[in-house]
Amino acid sequence: MKSIFVLGGALAAASPALAQEVPAPAPAPATAAQTVTLPVNTLVQVTPASEITSKKMKEGTTREFLVVNDVEYQGVVVIPRGSPVEAQVTWRTGKGIVGKSAKFELSFDWVRVNQANYKLRGMHRQEGRGNTAGALLGAAIITGKSATMVPGQIVNVFTADPIMVTKYR
Image (cartoon, rainbow, N blue to C red; front, side, top):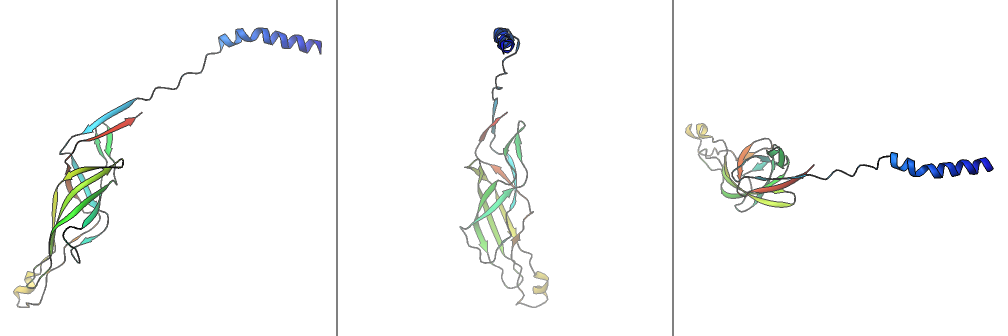
């Protein structure tokens, strides 16, 4: 036991020297932040989240769209793909006789980025395919088609506000 005690004392006496030789752990790297501001009038491509049809559509109702591709600026994704976009029905006509097709117009309101809504600008008019050939043949009761937009149909809209995001590295 005496040798164990002496050995323990030798280690205790050597530990200050050992502490000087072992480097201290490196401090955590500082988090670098990069803030970018997406300029006004930046192109954003959107598509309907679900089918939109002129049937039973009313002016003033809203429709949901999704951003098709990441919108990047200076290497930073400012608007991620799949971000929700809201559009409002601003005009609508129903299909009519003599081959007249239905039409509607959408005005794009905003895109949501990081729980905040940013204004967009842009309009889109969708028309159904008419049936004027049938109407010209004398069948006055033939009507046109409803106007329809489907997911995957791309519409170009533009930012109306600058959008600022901060990316941490």
